[in-house]
Length: 166
Image (tube, rainbow, N blue to C red; front, side):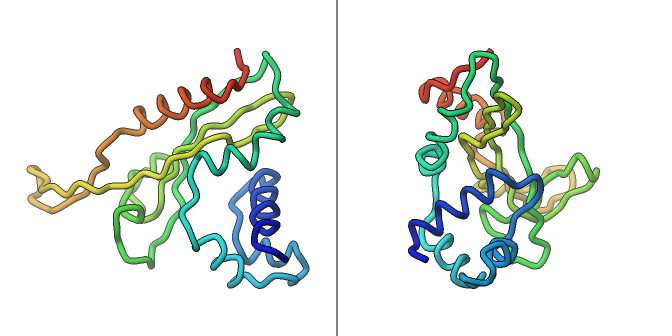
């Protein structure tokens, strides 16, 4: 399978999924035609952007768009407890579990229309600033912009992309 086609299949898998997706799951879905290692290498080759996502999903979005649609902001933490800490993999407050977890936090923008939710933008939370917490004296990380700012940027991009909504 060519890499461009693999990216299309991978994005289709993300669009149709109701839960977390994995390269192993996609390989299984493709009846082993493509190994999970190959999928990982293709996806890791270059960093994908929100604009790349929009180019992939735009045709699908145009099919479902409706003036009654809504745009939803959400975030998700993909836990990576065994991975070395860095700007994009670090400690985040997980309010659903009421504890901090190590992983990747992604802020997403979804277009929900005609019963379908389609991701139309995303931003990874990167904690690039290091500081010393005055309460406990420990070194910690923080992002240079807030999730609220990320949501506003994603919503502004949805408006620029002419996604109709209430």
